[in-house]
Image 1 (cartoon, helix red, strand yellow):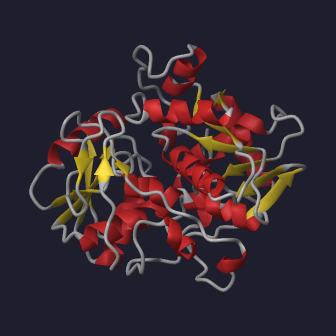
Image 2 (spheres, helix red, strand yellow):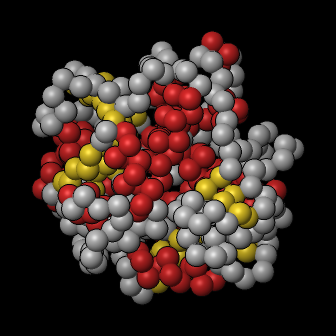
Image 3 (cartoon, rainbow, N blue to C red):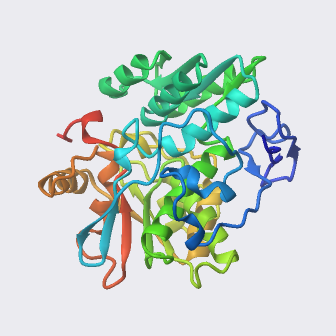
Length: 367
């Protein structure tokens, strides 16, 4: 097994040695980043490799996985001129969260964790539960009240213990973090643990490969905690630094208008969250995060890319879901947010890819 990279705090520089079960910065309690600057393989050298996200082994902090379910390499299909969709709802647990969950489960296994703990509004929890089942690791998933019954059923089916927390997504995260410091517990946080971002970045490596060594003008991503966007920014930086792309695409971040703390900060020209965004009901439950811990990083990544923030109403989400279904794509209500944001022509002539992040069977139709 290759040695693991250290982690560090992007705010104050505090380092956390490889092999530690620490899940946050010991000084400021903020999220961690990986001290890892890989060089991607050339397009030609990818031919014949395993047909999963593990084909990008040079860019992953873990190698030779034992818990893989064949995740990654999801199809890219056209929606209309210039805009394609990446079908990440065709992952083993039916959401893009498998990209990061497999790395967290693999890491927990290698660190000898006694118990895995996660918090989620649904999809991350189902992914962590599935990969812990694959790794034969005990798992507990904290979820907020009101989580989709189908997602709860899926988590339990994988053998994980479900703890339903009275309150919203933020209350759930607080409860999980209080339990995360117990001895022998691996906190499989898709927000705090940077190994999750190392998995989500494979989304863009796949785009680059499938588009023949280039990227679209715009990469559109839904943003709650920002794990897909920050992973995309990592991959773009890796490809650009290696000279494998000559320009960086703009990152367009999409939030539900009902819960849009990052879009509000963007409009205010701020580097961090402004004010307090109350939790509110929305069809896009998976991105309804009032206080994302990596807010500063998300805002900076969008700004550095020349991108922007877009918001979508509940009506736009509902119409986008039925529109995609009429095209043969049954996607959950959170997963249609990006298509809702761009389907009416805001991108002009620019090429773009939108992710369809979760399957419609997880939530049903938005009503």
